[in-house]
Image 1: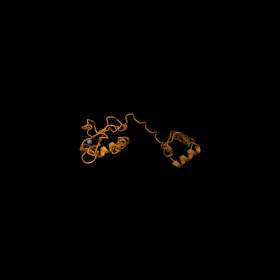
Image 2: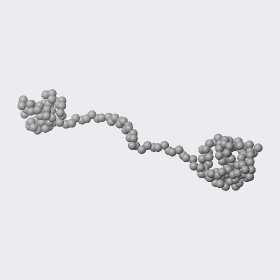
Image 3: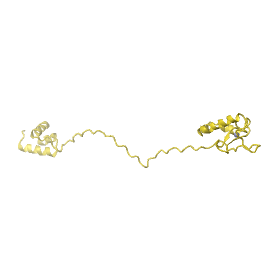
Image 4: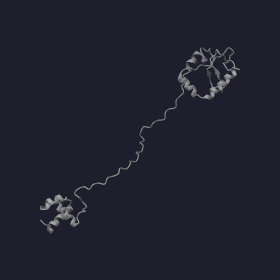
Length: 174
Ligand SMILES: [Zn+2]
């Protein structure tokens, strides 16, 4: 079956409507799908605007997503609260000696607790002055002195004070 004007007009119409070559071939009868395609090309109809088959979409390169803005409701890590120094040492007042004064570098002796109480730079600074048990401290201060945590805290309290103490004790032994 040849391409009569009628059949060509029908082909153009069906093609324009978006039918596929094989659909058109069925409707026209007597032509193969390839014949339809060949005719379409010869007629210059190939590039129709409404293809029956969806054209392959160009592969999209996934663009990196912009970082999502932080939600105000998002839980935030709160900065750790500063460690509050909690003195584990019993708050012992310096022992008042027979002299009516507290133990100082001048009155301190080997049998007295050398636990410093107060700020070495301050007038009220004194040593515990209680009877030392084993070592330089009284029983109470011994207990505190050899708690690891207490030792850490004393170190954290600063070296200046202990340096001052060493100097004072050096004077006392002279
Ligand atoms: Zn003591």
